[in-house]
Image: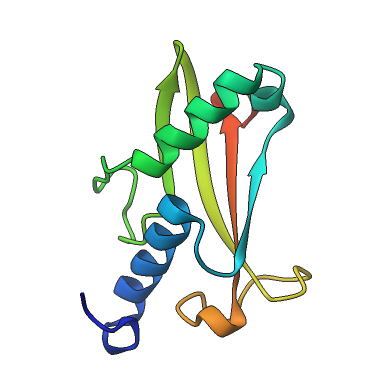
Length: 115
């Protein structure tokens, strides 16, 4: 595995996003929307599992190659997930999402109908 500090900025963002999304490792928070939560515990668990296992990135859903958005279907319900980048106190956007020391990632899982 490569050293994360030796890759270009967009590739570093992608690595950090994948690590956070699949393992919840790094500085960040997981947010579940009210609509997803209201579907019940099994739906929430399956949504998180599907987001963790998502690998269907394409130029349509990942034009900047940062692996920061996707959609999946859970029990015939379309789910969107998105990673946003904030500064450490969550008061503004991160000045450098490729720098883990400056960035708090927020992974939000929501029903497509809530978007």
